[in-house]
Image 1 (cartoon, rainbow, N blue to C red):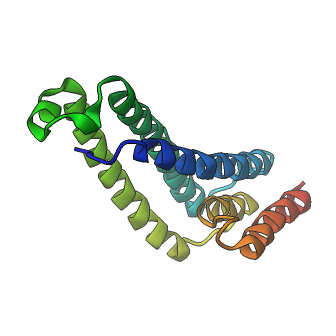
Image 2 (image 1 turned 180 degrees about the vertical axis):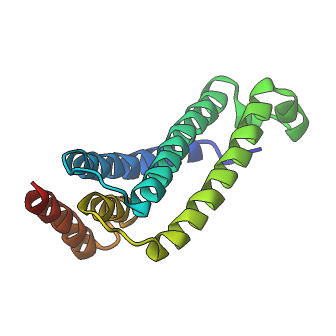
Length: 162
């Protein structure tokens, strides 16, 4: 159960949503490029699509968790209540369930991400999907040059594959 200081949810929410917007923009460009590339049998395509589906589920759950946490802080004065009163709220059970699901999703995503380098991309689509994942996990704030190189390579691949 989350017991963060008042206002922490708002700050975390803004930080994660800003990051998520960038991820969504990068992912949208990547997915748009990938859709136009003809598919052939490629083990990396299924593996990458599985990771991207987990990422989407994770992001949706994070947004739901943030909305509920913000609601509890603003409307139910979550930060001012005792642990016993917080635990008695039905929303606390939902937050705990979300926390467990987020942890499980994170672990599964990390396992798949660790395995992806060993899965060969044998088609332009597989390569594009691997680059799309890189465009999501490499943050422009943290390494702008790498991010720009990845998105540039993805655009180049799309151009070459057409």
